[in-house]
Image 1: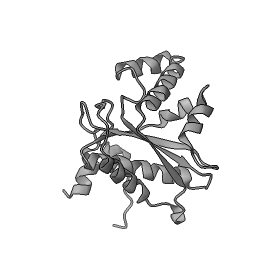
Image 2: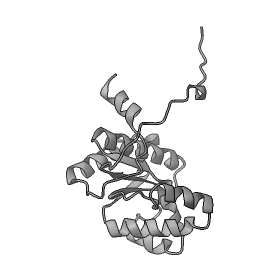
Image 3: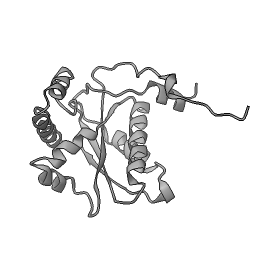
Image 4: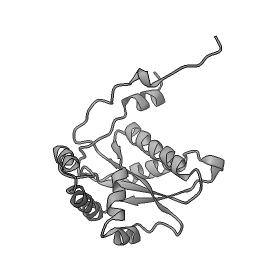
Length: 184
């Protein structure tokens, strides 16, 4: 199996990160992988905000957990996974998108590039749409101001990246999710 296919097959969603910060070279590699993502008509409808400010991540995490308390089932699930929404991740890459038609799809491609690049570097990642929660909550305006998305951009997705504290195997492949149409 070639290295790319091996990276895809072995990548998993990490939910237990070491608090150790990433190295500048690792962050640069992740950013370059994100920026290399293809996009519709090469419009590149994204803006990346790399957050390594642990206090800021923890504030957003606390706001998320405070919101999730309103849903006991979801809250218990989060408590079972360590009691926080962002899993102690030391780096979050927020992907802001503009309002072009294909921006949400392109954002997904950027997210996947970051996740695969992280795994190839020996890091863990979690693609985290839950970061939307604090951005829409009581402190949302403050958090958005601190993220400094350019005018016309809004939250698309975030990807948390860090060194893995404890890992797990990737999910099982479900071949029932595939149909084939052939000329034979």
